[in-house]
Amino acid sequence: MLNLSEKHSMIQKIAEKLAKEKVAPRAKEIDKTGAFPWDLVDIYKKHGFLYLMLPEKFGGLDGDITSLCLVIEELAKISGASSLIPLAHNVGIMPIMVSANDEQKEYLYSKIADPERPYLVAFALTEPEAGSDASHMRTTATRDGEYYYLNGKKSMITNGANAQLYSVFANTNPKLRTNGISAFFVERDYPGVIIGKSEDKMGMIGSDITEIVFDNVRLSKDNLLGKEGEGWNIAMSTLNLSRPAVGAQAVGLAQGALDFSTEYAWKRVQFGQKLADFEGIQFMVADMATHVEAARALVYDAAHLLDMKVYERDKMSAIGVDKLSAMAKVYSADVAMKVTTDAVQILGGYGYTKEYPVERMMRDAKATQIYEGTNQIQRIVIARDIFRHFMP
Image (tube, rainbow, N blue to C red; front, side, top):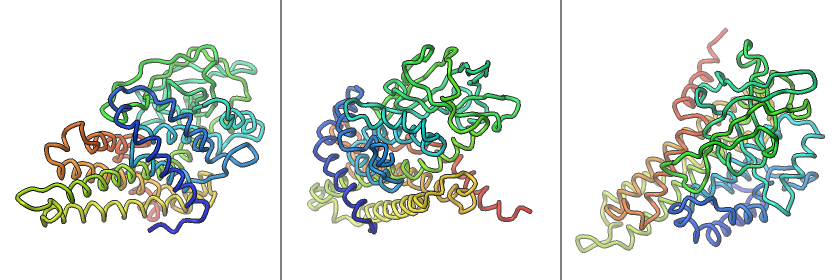
């Protein structure tokens, strides 16, 4: 049981109500058609989910990582794809949070919090040849006088086709590898920003994952987030902040599958008795529920630590946020995959059909093991942090 503050409890209740009343009637259709749900984006905007973490002085709700996790979990219980849109949007905002100056924040936050129009943001790090090994990115930002010229291609960008703003990472000095990576904000309407192909995915249908091409896009010094060469640290700080929210999404998917399958087991009769009366089903449900609770505890423990406002990379490493954030993501994603698969098994043949939502939840759960750093990469992060204490 989470011990939530009054503010967090209110945010959770709003998200739960919205998920049940607005998202649930649309979830099956969104997965069937794949159409981007702009109607839900408008609702998210109205309820503040798109400017949840912005400071109040810039029109935001002054939320934190725990607030984001609560919103994403409640939405994911109903629809993974519908939760991914505000999740990816807030991840796109995080590089601005951790590195933008006041003038940049005032300019960008005013657009994001504008109540008159939806304004989505995307985090653009991954490239065709630089996925898990993002340090080998080929996108460059070449400086010429007062301007940078951005060239390259980003891939697998969530919200890419529908975003109006991108947090982009590019090499300003390729010889320095990670120390030569810089971060920029790039707006959709800049000349040379080209929307490429959108991927045909197994799950998270309705969210878009898209290729973005930058063809000699001219940027000024005002587009630079932080200083030259700080982009890698900005990206890693962003991922530390965002991974508990991905964990919360996974917890939501698992909880949604658990809720549906247990209700089904209680009502479904086989061999003259309820499925819920069979010991084998009881053992499955007990394990599923235990794993979900453990994952939730890990997620909100990491979120609480991040909410201590230690957003600087060196401070995060010093107090072990890298490890805990990675643990929250990797464990929750594995739990989501296991629990949703077991939910399908409990429903039997019906679980394998699109008539019931558990097969969609299973397909959606797989994505959580892949994005924001694959679970294999998370295990490397965890192990390195453990062995770091033995290094001289």
